[in-house]
Length: 178
Image (cartoon, rainbow, N blue to C red; front, side, top):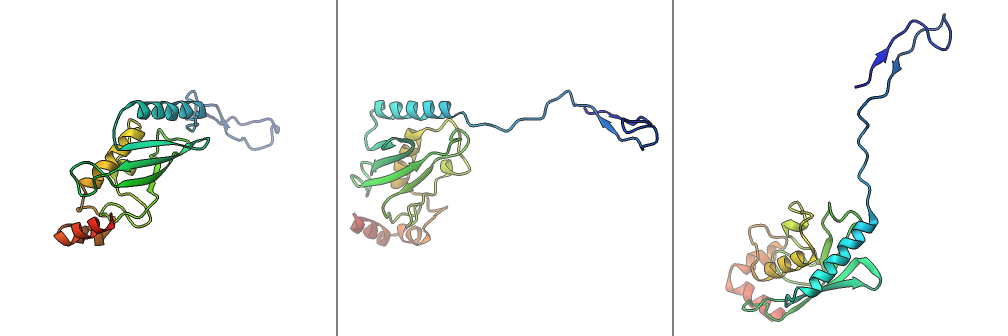
């Protein structure tokens, strides 16, 4: 805690009014979180290796050229869904503080689906308010792959797709876009 000393004299002389003297606090001010670029690079390299070694079918992602912060991904529609075998291209963009913020993930193609808009944006809680540093690229891709087949119409990003999806007309439109 800082202390204030109000002596009647100060360095300006005996006739000058006293100014308060503030002693430094024993507790240092908290420092802002700094981004450790090396640990971010190691994390992303580790995630790339884990994804390549996982053996998961239907998902993949790799850095774009020499930029570890920008990846291109591919998701194949899951077996036994109307989107089975359909290939979807994605872009992933990792912020420098990716442990604390989710990556930006977008479809690079149009997908008529309740949880994706026509601009490629994805409505998935782990990419927004439910983000945790425990999620990795593999988890993100598997979650999007699951969402493709098991949509969430209670929280749609594309309300037109959500309204059609609940009936046969929606399934026919989706099927025709394949």
